Length: 216
Image 1 (tube, rainbow, N blue to C red):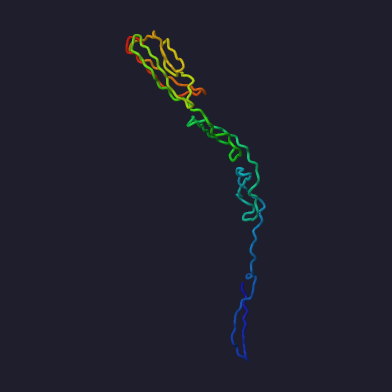
Image 2: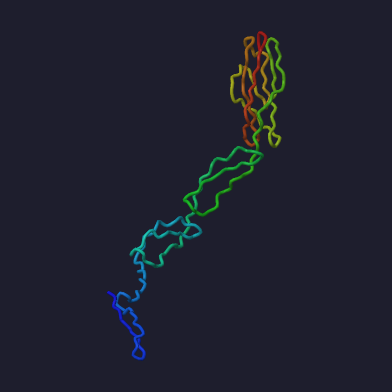
């Protein structure tokens, strides 16, 4: 409720005028701004992964609502050492092999083992030289030609097919004796590869021999 005062002015017994003013009351008292309460407790998110020896988290709620304060948002931590799992070495390309790795746990610290190493290129697939003769019986001497990255060839191996009896493989030369006898128009197929001095086996190459007479 407001109260009013009536003020009048007069000079020489003459009323000049009256003015109404408002009297201060309790509803006109200036209000004091409310100060936010200090937080008494916080609810936090989970700590983050330890990175550079520091973990962080955020405030998800505080008590009482709307309060102010200084929550703890980070802490020091110890980074776990990594455990590494490696892929197989890649094929030898231009004298280099590579591999990849995965590490655990997330954010761990460490240095993986070497991811690249030198290697010897395996020998190439053999090519065939020599001749076959359509005589009775047919005879052949075939030389397997192959090159290795270091220019050396240790020996040749048979990787598939079936050859008749009396067959021999000396070094990288395939030969058959004169009494090697099969039916006419028979195909003899085999596969050979070269193994180098480091034990690396190259790709196989197929060889097919055909006897066009009454014997091979």
